[in-house]
Amino acid sequence: MPSVKVPSLPNSIGPSPPAIGKHLFVLGFGRLLVATIVLGSSLLISVQGRAILRIPSNMQVYLLISILYFYSLVCVLLIKRLKDSQWFIFSQILLDTLFTTAFVYISGGVESIFVFLYFFSIIAGALFLDRKKLFIIVAFTTLFLFSVLLKTIPADILFQGNLFYHLWLNRFVVYKLGIHTISLWGVAILTSILSNELQKRKIQLFEKTKAYQSLERFNENVLQSIVSGILTIDPQERIIYVNNAGKRILERDDSSLMNRQIHEVFPALAKHLHTPTTTQEPSHHYTVTYESPDSGTKIIGFSVSTLLESEGKSSGNIIIFQDLTSFKAMERRVNESEKLATVGRFAAALAHEIRNPLTSLSGSIQILRDSLHPEGTDKKLLDIVLRETDRLNRLVSDFLQFSRFGKENFQRVNPYLLIEEIVSVLKKENDDGDIHFSNKLPEDFIIQSDRDRLKQVFWNILTNAVQSKDKPELNIVVKGTLSKKRSSSMSDIQFYTITIQDNGKGIPSSNIERIFEPFFTTRPEGTGLGLSIAYQIVSALGGTLTVHSKEGIGTMFKITLPV
Image (cartoon, rainbow, N blue to C red):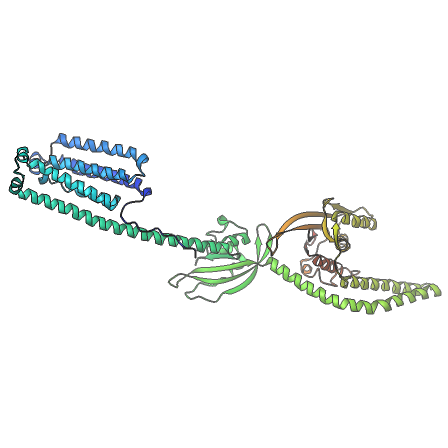
């Protein structure tokens, strides 16, 4: 798991610069709220009550309210320009204490009931300023409060040196002033401690939130980096999560997956789901087919497990799946290669055992026919023997070609010219004019391959296409495409894919799996080795040979070779 960088705890309280703008709005709004409630409510008190509580005249209250509103408006206008300076907050709170002092002064000084307004400034300082600036605010507040005491001291006493005697006479006032001062500093210290603890809790919460988000991102990156598809469903079998690999395999996006019923998206999978339980059951592995929107039929292998919450309660199923289409195709190719290798080992020995006596037999019969000059039934019988002998000779020749694969002779080969040579021969053999060839390969494209063997591949496939004719006209089209594939060494290798497509009778789906097996043929005169030889040649050249066919529509062979 990646490390999480955690901010260090500050030595003093106070907001970070991004939060100062927000604090300025809170401070301004709080000022107007307190001023409106305190000063506005004082206007509702009767004349007798105002005299007892020493509330200033209405004119003084209106003037003070107007000044506060104007001052707050100016602060709001300056917020965007000065919001990055904490000193702006400090100056506002300091001015607030001045306004409070003025109101306390005109409402009875130390005897004023509005001394409690100082606490709002101190609490604001504790919340929005660091400890140093807070204590400066408290010191000025104390100084302002002591200045109110000057209202009770006549000016001549200050100059006559009787100040301490006067204070002794008014020791109750001094006592109240001392109580107020202790209260102010006590509130400042307590709110400072509480604010500092609050700041620590915020930082701890920030640390835990950041660590949780980092862990969540890490887990999400892991899930999105896995090459297997991961899909989770809730107890109602609705899809609630799919990773990127899953979307790629299913060829769908979030809009067609999220909150959809699993049987709507993946019908073959839905029937294998087991009812969620409160215990973790062993995973069940299945293989099903899936009809993708773009790539057709895919073979999907998947496992299903119960998705458990932290309390051990089941919350649905988790499905891990992979696209096994290429693996299954590779498995088939391996099986076919093993079959071809087995047949190849027997073919060489069998060909040597059959060809020599077959040649002697064929020659002897020809000599007998030429010397005896048979007629009628005897001549027909000899012709049958010679014809079947020739057929056996072709079969043995195919055997020998199938088994004799030595070292490849790689050279510069032009696929277009090879196709043209074969097409010219096939056109002469089928001169009815109802078979049309279309060679759309690039005329100047060159690949490195074995010319003779590649020509044999083209000949076998094109001959097979011509023999699939079951319509008045047969169209055979040859195309080529260039592509890149990433090798195991992480380098890009260029491949050239040649497709040979016809509109013949096609291959039944039951025969597709066996089409490259030796001796498998649906034609009475066929040996069943043509496509097997083509497959073995392409594999030896480092390529792949695949077939796609629909009965009654046609067949397409894909020959993919490294450039």
